[in-house]
Structures are given as structure tokens and as C-alpha cells.
Length: 158
Image 1 (cartoon, rainbow, N blue to C red):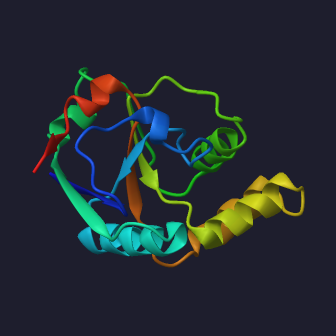
Image 2 (image 1 turned 30 degrees about the horizontal axis):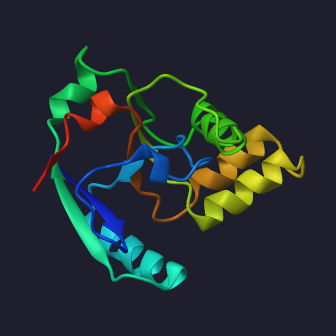
Image 3 (image 1 turned 30 degrees about the vertical axis):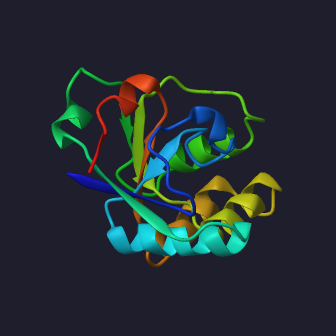
């Protein structure tokens, strides 16, 4: 399968030290299988950081590895209680790694989802209500998190 990464500065070696902590699935390298989503992210990063220019990197990944014993993989099939709790835990991890998965696949918590997650963590809504709200979010897409050197070794830059 082809995966894409949108950035504002091209690079050829993935460095976990440059990855941002407290993201949905933890500090790691994030990709999508939707090229336009990577393009949009690259444009957003270039504008937000006010440097570089939009770059979309393309990678090849053997999808059968997601169901083999080669990697420790967690797949969230959609919005669920487990998915929401996993994201909340990673976002509140204060830079610490809280799981041992090589690869995590699941919905992206975009700005709308982030707002709902914040409402949940502040106690304004219950987990049940959070899940109900998120199930009706439009345009939720899937992200692929690669969080270990082992996982990265299976990505081939095209």
C-alpha cells in the first residue's frame, strides 16, 4: 500500500526526536493513505511554521504486516470507547510512551474531535456522550502511526 506524509521541510531520515509528543497515538511518525490529506497537512504546516514549503513524501508499506506477527499492531476499526481512551491517555502522557505498539491505525482526532475530547477530559460530557458525538463527525479519516525503529524499517520511501 502507499502511504503519504505531509511536511514543510523534506527529509530522508525519520528522527523520532523531531516528532511531537502528546499526539493521538503518541510520539511517532504519522502517515495517511489519502494523498490529498497529506497535501493539506503539508500546506498547513508550511503556513503554521512560516518556513519551508509543502512537501508530500510517499512510502510503500506491505499491508500484510498489519496482520502478521512481524510487528505489534493496534487497529481501531472506528470510533469507540477504547479509541477515545487511548487518544486521551496519549495526549495526556506528558511526552512519555504509554504503549508498546510498533504501528497503530485508526481515526484521526481532528479539530472537531479535539474539541469533544477536551469536553470529556474537563468532565463536561460523559464517555458515552463523547462516543455518540464522534460517531456523527463528518470526514473522519484514518492515520497510520509508526512508533518504533522496527516499524520504520518496513517503510520504503518512493
